[in-house]
Image (cartoon, rainbow, N blue to C red; front, top):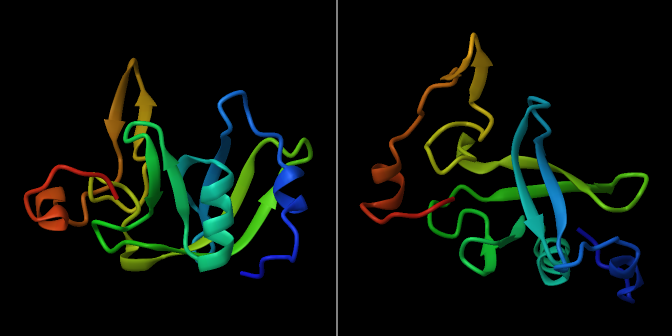
Length: 138
């Protein structure tokens, strides 16, 4: 990723009242939407600087380098904003093939059918094997 000389590109984003912007991570190879997350200014700047996805974790209250615990990093190949500049789409290569902390390829594995939610994607690796007994998220 190439960071321009000034930070005006960060000012072009319409951050919400809490300083965040929603982000969709889409896998380039398959075209699948793997996850939804949030970024603040620092997370977006670090993503651009490192070429790997860095998000703002609302539950942890801190920056979260995707894969910091699991090793399942996301290499960012392209970043786009929508027409209102209030949402981002990042095109990624998902290292290790697992984006979800449940051990699945992506986070959107539950489908509504006949009044309930059903899991429609398999667990590729059990979370306890990913996190070595630690509770955590990718």
